[in-house]
Length: 312
Ligand code: ADE
Image 1 (tube, rainbow, N blue to C red):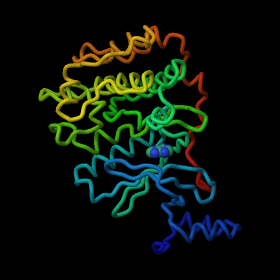
Image 2 (image 1 turned 60 degrees about the vertical axis):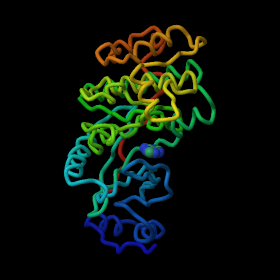
Image 3 (image 1 turned 90 degrees about the vertical axis):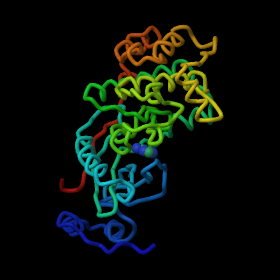
């Protein structure tokens, strides 16, 4: 594919003038770029997006570049998304993927995200089987602290699943896609515009009187916890209809070998009525998590400062 014509901003011009390293200048000018980032191979994809690995052309910092095609979003979704994205840039939590910056072109939106290079929880469990009790605790506690932070500022994930729980190389948990899923897809309509992944969907998502609040995320955390400690999903069926019935009837069985305190936590979360479901603080105080100190004290967070552009 031909490279797009080079149009440098005044800052980029200044940087190129200042930069004595010819190879870097060449890389800035030749090759696929988004802003200051050199784009590499695809590392993931979603309903509305693709994710590519990218490097800052000068600092070499790795980032994940989430690419959204404007064509696939209606005008309302685009407006909401742009607004949402700018507020996401101020979000900072050690267990939430940081949004460093947004690059906009007429046809695309590029989200420059913190890179989590340790894979995702779904692949990890598929490849290695269930997590040990202690790893489950540390992982779950970090997801929980991310959810607590976001719920406190009224952001609901609505697409929490093992695929969105990423790890850094050092094993720190980073929840991805926070805040976008609610805006990109229309969750207030019936199930034909179903947001999120059906096996993680709370019973209220299948009802007409749907109240799609924070308990939707709490339910998904119950599914996630079940998946982590057993290596299997609590609700499985060959058809969507059967899955829906399973979830609405809240019919699942926790294997008897799961430690008692963890069983109690799962049963406190996976309750059909949102009002009866554990709240975040009840989860934080449960017996199973009691031995876990503050998660980011156990796994030191990595510095989450955005890659710096020279001269900024
Ligand atoms: N896939 C999707 N988002 C990602 C991220 N932030 N880091 C690594 N891989 C990803």
